[in-house]
Structures are given as C-alpha cells and as structure tokens.
Length: 229
Image (tube, rainbow, N blue to C red; front, side, top):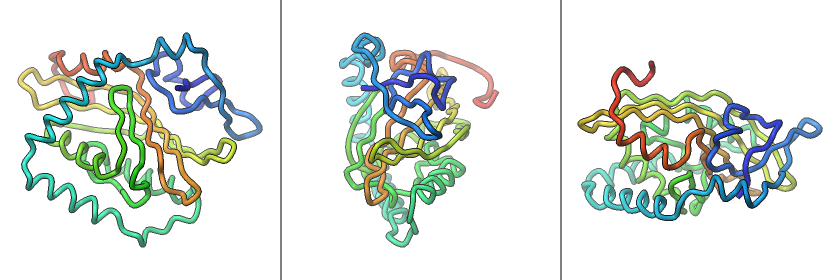
C-alpha cells in the first residue's frame, strides 16, 4: 500500500486519506512514486473484519435483488461496452471519464465500461474485487438506496510514472440513504485509474478523507437537511 505524500495534487486529503493508490510527488512537471513507512501503512489499514462485513452486506444485497434488476444492469453494461469508442491516448480516457462524472455515473450506475479491462481491479477502503461486470452490478445495487444524491468532480488530471499511465480524479459525494433514519453520506475522495499499454483501465482505486470505520458509521447516524447543503 502507498499513501499520498506532499507536495501532492490532492492536498485536502493528505492528512486523513485512508487508502491511496500512489504516492505522488511533483518532479519536472510530472509525477513519480514514493514509498511510505510500514508504520504509516498500519495506521491507515482497514480492519479485515470490517472488509469482510462490507463484502457480506454487498453479497446479501446482490442475492436479494430481483433477476429483472440484474438483467437491466447487464443490458446497460453491454450498451456501454461498445468497441467503437475512440481511444488513442490518455487524454481520450480522461475525456470519457470526465463525461462519466458529469453524468454522475456513481449515483446513476451508468458508466462507460468499454474503457475498462474485463478483469479490472476495483478497490476502496472497505472492499476489493475484480471484474467490471461485478462493478456494474454493485453500482446498480446501491443506486435504489440513494436519496438526493450528488457527486461533484473537483479536479481530473493525467500523469505517468515509469511505464504506467494514469488518470487521477478528485470528487465530493453527498447523498442521503433511503433508510428510516435517513443518514447522510458525505465523503471527499479521489479515484486513481491505472491504464495498461492498450489504454484500458486495469485498476480503479478510491481514497477517502474519512476512515473506513467512519464511512460505515455514517450509515447509522441520523441526519436532517439536504444532501447538497
């Protein structure tokens, strides 16, 4: 595991980011990796029991979802997985990702799956799994629980480290959940998109400004007002 170190492109996350895909330092106009100490890694590591609990809840939601809902998710995945999407360089990938954010893909479940490798690794501070089809299904499971959701793109940029090209996006997520106590989920975060030599996304890693435990705790905290307040 690596963490963000300064000076870094997402300075508002440098103190509390729970998981970071890459340590970024500006050097000669680009970015390069730097390492973190084992002590720092241990402080930000998510407890295995919490990861297991989140995985279990996700699996239960999937099992209880209707087959019709699954079919719609698969259909939308296929419709977004067109081979005709032109991608000739990292700028094209950035452009498509930016459009997905503008269409609020995380809170709608609709994203351009064609730019992802079939076995892409997806991870955040609470869960890790492989496969863009599973990612699509997981998004579709979450969407019905959102109430007044919004995800705002704050910054998106491309970079390269050694032989690896990537896109880094920072964002703000706000949404209530359709539960009796109407909890508010409020997370500022970043997503690191690692590309392979074919310009397919092979790793999609989220970092948050709250710990995994704090994020899960938001689900059980009642709140009032509007999500964009």
